[in-house]
Length: 156
Image (cartoon, rainbow, N blue to C red; front, side, top):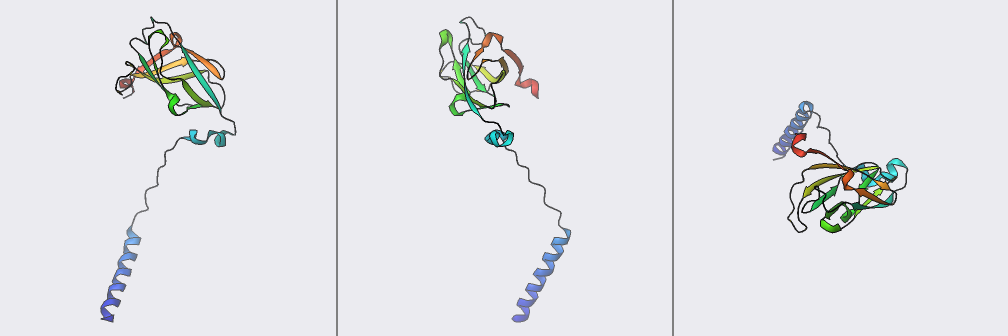
């Protein structure tokens, strides 16, 4: 019985050694993460909260029956929790405010956008909307000055 166990252990050791000699190196692990999780440590700059208000007229064609905007993170800012999605409607109606954390006041921000009524189900956005920003901690986004970028289909 000892010979059988010894033979088995010897065979396992030889197989393990042979396997290790022919095995290829493991593929490197790829880690994708957002540096926005700790920009203060990455940049050495302090983050501050900024709040955005929207300016638009009732005849703004972009708003139509309603406009849903999703803030797209980009240096020097990233979105804060519930403050990254805003619905805008006729006569100044809205269901939230834009809240972002930045290392300095932004001069331009981008949104993914779609037209929808206030209580519409979630749907795919159309594309990018790029908007200039005026002000500092409490800034204003004039939708009449925003430019509509290509629809998502153009990125394929």
